[in-house]
Amino acid sequence: MNKQVGMISTSAIIALVIIAALIIYGISGYNDLASQNQSVNSSWAQIQNQYQRRMDLIPNLVNTVKGEANFEKSTLSDVINARSKASQINMSPELLNNPEQFQKFQQTQGALGSSLSRLMVVVEKYPDLKTNAQFAQLMDEVSGTENRIAVARRDFNNTVQQYNTAIALFPKNIFAGIFGFKHKEYFQADVGAAKAPAINFNN
Image 1: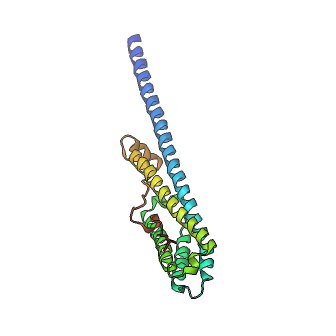
Image 2: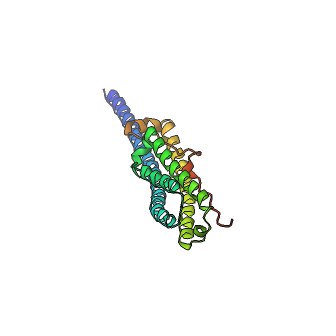
Image 3: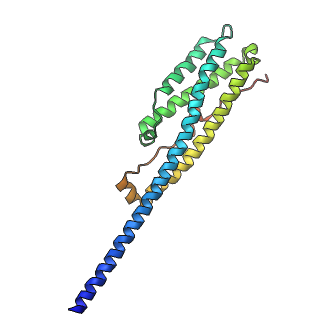
């Protein structure tokens, strides 16, 4: 009888140790995924900051260009309309879990980047505007912002890759499913918003 009780006690202890180990591993796995998820959100916040900076620069840029006589209104309208469409999309982290909305976001930001590029091409026809100190300063800021956007997007994709890999590998994929950690979307390399407009005031 004592031998049976001892065996039951040993089995119970072993079972408790296994359960405790699973719980500890589960907590560790959850904490790791939560940390990586926060890293993705932090990288996304940096992208938000740079896109918002570009949005904020555009009204001043447009107003400066408007001061140039006979400037092509259609080019300005394209920039204004592209900015308006881009500003209508909420850049919350939830966007990363929605492929359709994320693609729409990339398209609107790409259109805005393309309209700024076209504006730079048209500016070449207006020597007085090219020598305008305020315009030159604004374009330096726009160019710098476009470069920072490209860097932020690259860093974001690297962070998302680490996160997506973590939630796909066994056994963390089990915890990812249990706790609702979902696949995040990447920025695509061919999106126009990742490319800085060509700016040349030397011609």
